[in-house]
Amino acid sequence: MSLSSSQVLRSVADLYAAIRDVNPLVVQLTNFVVANDQANLTLALGASPIMSFSPEEQLDLGRITGALLVNIGTVSDIQSKTALLAGKAVNERHRPVILDPVGVGASSYRHQVVQELLAEWRPSIITGNAAEIAHIYGLTGLGRGVDSQQEHSDPARLVRDLALRERCVVVLHGATDWLSDGETVVKLSNGHVRLTTITGTGCSTGSAIAAFSAVATPPEAKEINLHDLLVASIAGVLATSIAGEIAAENSPNSGPASFRVAWIDAVSTLNPEIISERARIQVVSVV
Ligand SMILES: Nc1ncnc2c1ncn2[C@@H]1O[C@H](COP(=O)(O)OP(=O)(O)O)[C@@H](O)[C@H]1O
Ligand SMILES: Cc1ncsc1CCOP(=O)(O)O
Image (cartoon, rainbow, N blue to C red):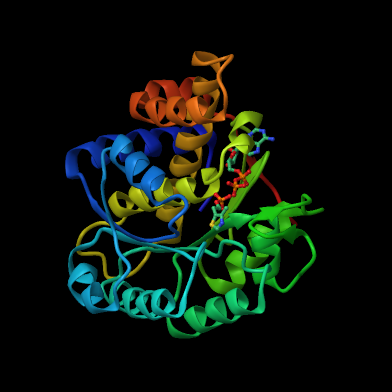
């Protein structure tokens, strides 16, 4: 399906209306570094977060959630067991499962955890920085720890090819954001360099993508629609990156801790008009 910037912006406006109308529940299995920011950012968008760490509750939560975020930032054996059960339960209901493989290339343990998850369930969206996305594709060497040290030389092709292979949406975030559903490739050029001065902007973008995905997929859907999830992912990235621009304008002289607060505040003030005015969206052709 072809896509234009104006169509994307109309669909993003519909998602803003839906998220405030539905107040979807978003189950988030995430790391202990960023969990509080992710919960607040989810609330600021109009969705309802529940952070969870226990395998025992995943069947119950899987029955009621609008979408599931699995972020392996501080993964342990118990959390990977939790993620296995949660992903299967949410896959069965055809609700979106968002995988953020934080630091997947940093240790063989994280690599193995992600391989096990991908063998047991199917992510609807994979979101990560250049090093994480390249690692999942089978390339190594771009990262160290949870950060990407380098840009990928051909991010448009990388996201398109990984999306085709895994039959999901792929989001590569960084100074420029690249997204694909395997057919369309979109480049987003919003954001502010001060977002790199605080930890967890990528993780929080995963929460925003999950929140919009929850309302992009109708309650009784019998299958995942990747085109709809591409638009939801664009909405999530635009929310956190444009909020970064607004936060930088509102607190020009602050340190990183105050910038972090200004950023979450800015997310809560977003609306479709602000997004339309500021969004820098380009549909890219990859041959
Ligand atoms: N140099 C930059 N200039 C502008 N925006 C940026 C820059 N780096 C990151 N961003 C913004 O921050 C978001 C998260 O990017 P990233 O740095 O990859 O996160 P993290 O390191 O937390 O995983 C991106 O989606 C983008 O909007
Ligand atoms: C520092 C750190 N260590 C484990 S998870 C985490 C946060 C990573 O956040 P992000 O992936 O958004 O940079």
